[in-house]
Length: 525
Image (cartoon, rainbow, N blue to C red; front, side):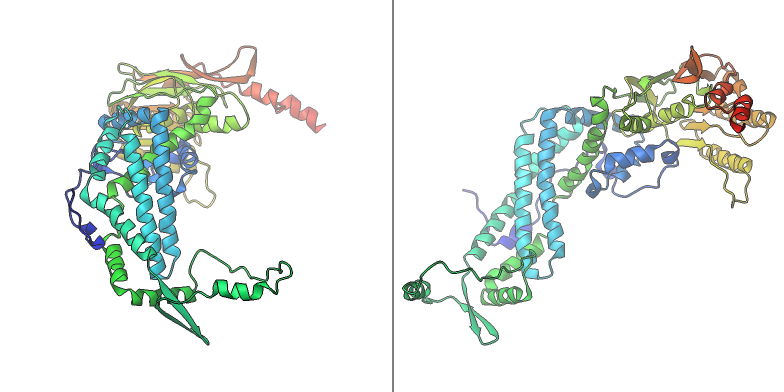
């Protein structure tokens, strides 16, 4: 028979603990506990919208910092991808949801404790919280142990959980809690009301006059009387009279309540840090799968991309996830696009008609790489992507009237800042820069920037109105937005790999919106 201490306060004794694990990173020391600075790519690529939508249903977990921390190496990306694949299996998902529900009940318990002012009442809720934690962990461990897993991260955590639940400290924690609750439930006392004073004393063999009184008055009963009892308000906390009575009861039972004090003090941090971290970290995976589920239900594809340090990138059937969310509200179809860079090719130069999907394509390129660096399934049929060290963007911004800088000066300073920090492993996305100057000056400035990008072997996308950039060198690849064959004013939003044709189709748009010279004269008349 196993020997156990009879003193509940002793369950906090030190014992060997299993090795901590994290399901966010191969190295638990790199888990994301604090919020890094927001990357500059968030607003330009609409990643802020995507992250906000994914994390909104789970605000209590503070998941935004995790989404703001792309992974630095392929090992960690593959680590997360494997966990995502495991969690996509219904049996694993159901088990994790059950555990999350148990931990949610525990958090509600802890939040209630924070609202309570009376220490004895806080201790009662504390004991309930210990039992909630014990039940959640034991049930999770029992079910999780029988589930087949393939990801190293979840397998490691399952092993940790199995070791943790057989630890002496964990087993004795619940036993000591139950023992204290049984002893507290057996406490009896007597309350004496003497005038305006309340006294508490031990319960002796006090006579119960209830039946005798009811018997005396029974003969006078003619019918059921109206119930005049007032319902007392119960806000979930003891009032000051109840609290004082409990203090007096504690004084009468000083030994028992002394052991209760010692138990609570010794086990304040009864929640295991690794299990608490897992409770939060797993919500990153669940939140993302929940976010993309409606898109999948609409038939849109998601895949696990191959992520590597080299620059040969490719994607089939890819789309802008933020735009897809907006289109879904209007029940409109999403247009997917492909791209590929191989050999010495490094920069996609995007030209074509206005409002033809060029900026959307650039955002999609950035989104795919960023989400892939998080280890997430991305919006595409298939993809092979570059793992960057920084994702840098320069999108056109409206001129600010109060600024002392001209728009061109602002463009140049922003471009200088990007080139100062860009490395060979960076990705740069440029959208319609140098539009505030003459074509000749814009062409000269663009060539200077392009030369520096190619010299550094940088991967990127450049949306531009300058067709000459599309054939700048063997490192540049031209992609052009398309229009409907039968109507130049209709955009297909599909970009194809072909030489720039110099056609903006602006006149077709002007005619469609009745903004040509002839249409304006007719409208004025």
